[in-house]
Each structure stands twice: as C-alpha cells, then as structure tokens.
Length: 179
Image (cartoon, rainbow, N blue to C red; front, side, top):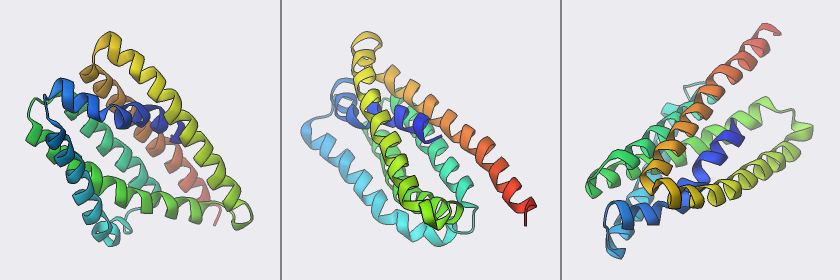
C-alpha cells in the first residue's frame, strides 16, 4: 500500500505547480492561494483526530489514500481554480489527520522492539517511490499532459487505498482471532 501510494503522490505533489499554471492558467498568486488552501486544511485536520480515532487505523489510512486519490482525479478533471482550491483544502485536512492515523497504526501493530526499523523501512519505501514517481510523472506530463498525470496518479492512489482495505483488514482479522 505504501509503495503504491508513494508512486502516486510523488508526481502529483511535485507537478502541482505545473497543473496550476498550464491546466488552470493560475498566476503565481493563484498558486500561492492553492498552497494556502492546503495549509488551512492541514490546520483543521488535527481537529478531526478524535473522530478519526474511532475508526480502525488501517481503515483511516486506507480511506485517506482513497480520498486523496479522488481529489487528484478531481484536480485532473476540474476546470475551476476555486474548485481546485476546495479539493486542496480537503487534501490538507486529509493529510494531517491521515498522518496521525498512519503513525498510530504502525505503533499499534508493530512490535516495539522493531518499530524504529519499520518506520525507517517505510520512509525508504516512501521516498524511493516518490522520487521514481517524479521522474516518471515528468515524462508522462510531457507526453500525455498534466491533467492525465493527475487522473492516473489519483487512480493509482485509490488502488493503494483499496489494497490497504483488503490487505490490512485481513491482518486485523487475523490479529483479532489470535486473541
């Protein structure tokens, strides 16, 4: 799940400025307002942590990937800069609350003696996937267009969330049955 997610978000994160400029015709100020929408959402996200904490962590993490994936598809399809800003505000909420769910999931599910190594491995997978995604995404943007990159990235991220729902729910069931 983490590897697929990294392959999806590297390109869409790095190429957001290209989308803003080329597909939405936003100025530097418009792009700055998009970034402000992400920041505003990220400030709201922690307020949702008590609500998110009621959901099993694997569902919150998987759901966060699906929500971000749908947002990236939306960014690829929308034509309104204001609509794009609304999606990016949701992205900010989703990212900050999803990070808490991800950290919680790893801390609860991984034995304490190897938690640090698992976090390190997950970070390596994340950064390597993002770097690969940036390279591939730049080539795809040049060949099929920036909007298509966001639609494909969103679809891949949604797939990552589906893998998480399927694979992690099986892990949770196995853990519960061993109790």
